[in-house]
Image 1 (cartoon, rainbow, N blue to C red):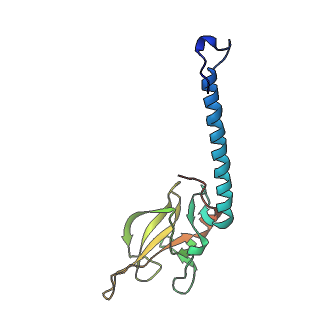
Image 2 (image 1 turned 180 degrees about the vertical axis):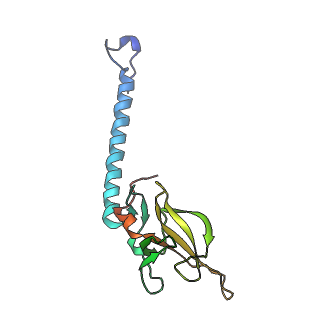
Image 3 (image 1 turned 30 degrees about the vertical axis):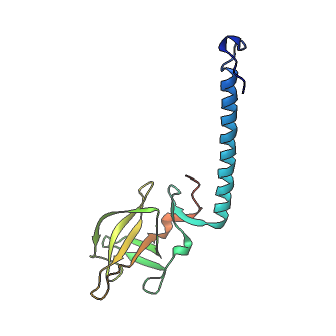
Length: 162
């Protein structure tokens, strides 16, 4: 790259040639990076479907994380306030954050305490995370998420890259 003193720049030139060249190079790199990101996102979305928050599209869990609890994946449950939910059980839900203490009262699954599960982005109530009470014969904890199915929709792998 050839440097030209400011005094020799063309009149009306917004940037010195060297700066323009640097910006052009940077924009090309950004454009290339964006095209690469879009290609990777397309490839990932073809192979990795997610269930996402219906409100904000934050990836919550993958269909392959679906599990059976008490013999079923789907459960119809009514809380003490009379509100009925259709929930699906999942071994993992990395897109939720839990709030509040573990509570055993009013649990829909015997021997499992629950905590409220919110979307980690928009904080919509998506369900509950359950933890099995410790039994005398084992130190392992069994966990799963019971997610409200009409608050999820099919989506794709997140497009953010680090």
